[in-house]
Image (cartoon, rainbow, N blue to C red):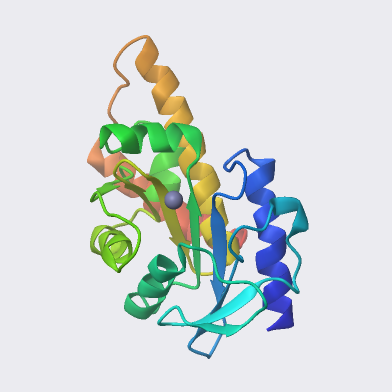
Length: 218
Ligand SMILES: [Zn+2]
């Protein structure tokens, strides 16, 4: 548990490093292996004050189990994902600029880059408009990502939620999501990006997820 507190606290620095967050927006969580618990960022604490000690532990209903601060205001959404997607070990939320611009238009990011085919296996989909306060954000994430290759969803008018086998993988998906959102946005400025044939997307995804992944675990 202490290891995971440190991992989750440290991963928040990656959100800052890649310019995915401002002020106290954004959060990372990680599932505690073998227990119905997860570690998440405390609410309202600035990024440079995050430590392993002030991380918060919650149960899968989002109730506070351990911690002096209240958990992130997005805790219910994280909890809903962990309850309904047992394979998920990490969840990340950001309002990163380019990805959120796609979300503001309610437009999925089309798969027009090989790196996107590798990482997301197709488009990055849009999830429904949902207000904070109940399970509707969590439901929207799970409905959109369950059975989808993409590990990131653009929640309409809101921002990005990403998932992974652990917290680090979810952070990587959030970083890559912003990267492709920016590149495809820039490509759009001077014309229409060329589509990649579905067969080629499938081949790229398969190679990256299987062959490449085994040589260089990530
Ligand atoms: Zn948000």
